[in-house]
Image (tube, rainbow, N blue to C red; front, top):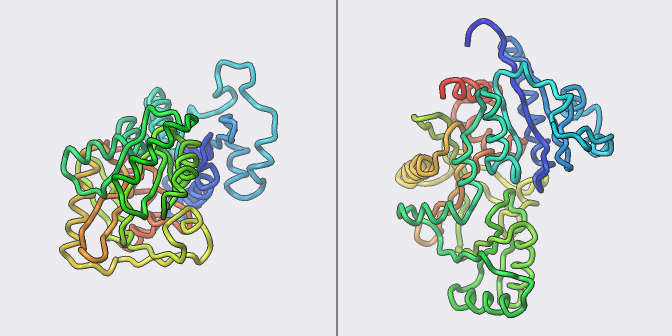
Length: 355
């Protein structure tokens, strides 16, 4: 990397339903770059995007990350880009050497931020536009995996349908009842952190579940619900992807919903997961294969289902900007694999420079 310090540009917040999770992730990464060893190699500029989609400068953004000001107070400030064509006006980003986007969900994890940053001609931590977009879209992702015979639970796709039409909703409900045994899961095609997802136990709750998903995305996935264990595996690297240990998350709630993921003391993480070497090998193999199929590199977390009675492995989804919060699985997986959070963020920067 040479002798000069590299300036890391952390982008967080965003016009997304995962705004608050992004802030928590950015706080963890910001702190990791300010560890004793990393301060010798890196400087950091922070760029907060509020819920209106407005970019804030480094000073205000840093205040949010160190807890000197709440982000909801910043949101109330005068909007920078009102009646302006250049929405990055007053944002000093020219000295950034490497971008580290931590925008979960819409307008970030879906490849939007990657497309914008590409015009700066500077490297970024994570994968590019294509892998981000495919990893975010459950329908496209499942379609590709089906063609490659990567194991997944049975699913049904809903798109180009108007759920404001009662006849359409009735038709979809009948199709779902015909195709699946209960329980099932109804999910928006583009969302994260389990937002917009419902576990449906009988036909009476299909309508509200469809409406909940449709509020987030008009493209919807219906999946069969199995008796499963939740397993996860991380990757880092470019052409040569490295896998972390496989971890398992157990939870007190009925399924791994938003509350389970981000509430205090609500779940237990087991790393390495208590699974056979053969299942661990299978998960790591599918992890690499699936990421390469979607052109995903840099870093990601791949989520799996392990059916209890059969021990069959099913790929659930890939997260191209997984959480970095204190409760997030991705940094825990790499901690158990020999990279603490300070080493992990530095490693990700090195990977971005080698791409």
